[in-house]
Image (cartoon, rainbow, N blue to C red; front, side):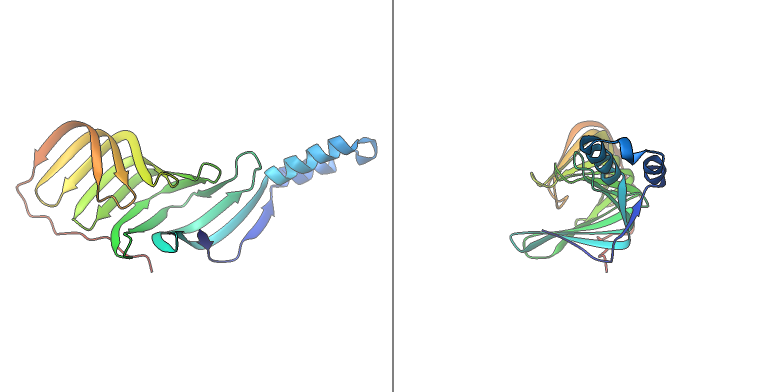
Length: 200
């Protein structure tokens, strides 16, 4: 179940209006008008500011997502929600305890597949003080898995940094696997411990 806060305002794309005005409706068939209406609907954008989304599974809190701007494209063939100005997320275990936090500059939720693509400066911090950085993550909500085929950098506390190609994890980012390790750097300096940041 997804719960979305804040009011949503609909804004029809201007090019649609201009296109419709230029048509001579008197000579159009029902089929042509129906096609025009479908084109208009597919170009309608729902915009919301300061959005918070709560994901639950069997009444168990799984994740919270916050975005300063969300755009929903109710395209019948490909409905999707875009978060073009950044996204933050918290992930929880079955007891409601926060396990990790995520931040990125961009995300797109493809509603039919229930898949979220998270891109650009993706940073995850889990409660074990492990920091994961990559350029892209794919969150498959149906399978409850997170994957990436991009280069990944994992800092294990103040012990070492692991570089790899590809990444697989559960939704909590507590149980993950690196597909191909390309390098390990052992650290010899103290790094201040980090913990997941809770979304208010």
